[in-house]
Amino acid sequence: MNIISNVRTQVPLIHCITNYVTVNNVANILLACGGSPIMADDAQEAAEITSICKGTVINIGTLNARTVDSMIIAGKKANELGHIVVLDPVGAGATTLRTETTFHLLKEIQFSVIRGNISEIKTVYQGSGTTKGVDADISDRITENNIEEVIAFAKQLSKKTGAVIAITGTIDIVADSSKAYIIRNGHAMMSKITGTGCMLTGMVAAYCAANPQNILEATVAAVSAMGYCGEIAFAQTQKENAGTSSFCMHLIDAVSQLDDNALIGGRNIESRE
Image (cartoon, rainbow, N blue to C red; front, side, top):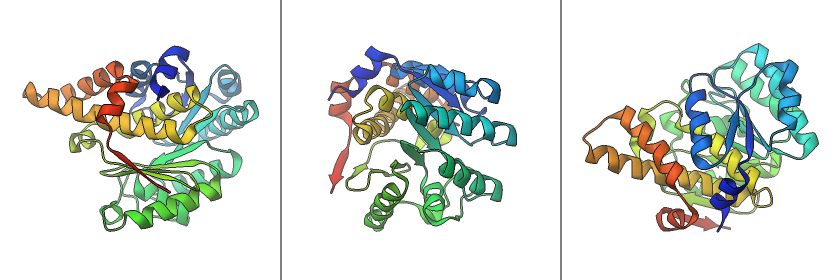
């Protein structure tokens, strides 16, 4: 596996129209994983910026009407150029605006990957949902009891959208229309800092942009890498008897030091046909 080394060698430029609450950490995690971030959300430059990038992130975390047009312009330009486009439908299902915007984006843009929590992805699948703010509804949690059902709808959604589907939470599922991976890396402390999901979406875009012929495997690598680095960060934070701010710092540090061999040794994944 050379997915991470490809990122570090190619240094893909990733255009992020993303959540302004987490934009700094998204930029930092992209730099840490070997990519290069650019954040530009004005419609007048969206196409031009996208044209010089290898990947585009569309994240509706801090949704407003002004940036929706920019998202569509950027997504269409990326599609025209054959570049990676990743959707993070933050809070889809929580409000009518978020849900309708998600489906508008899906209609206008062909996404390479759709990454969200279980409630957000169920909303994309069903057309409505019970997302609580930007967090998954507890009733939607992925467990060992419902994991086969989640895999089935992830595969169906991939077939419908043509995108790899990444469902992240305590247990992560990454699937295309024919194959799925179950990932059991991560730590609960990751939910105590803002933006780990947004950060992961940026990493997914960088990993896929550097490995465009292996989008499923690149997405799996990004998801497992973030989870594994969360484990490393927690161990270091606990060793220092530190808190959440230190955890965030150690998470970025761990991503910056990760290579393919370390990920192979630390990831906890299984595949399902």
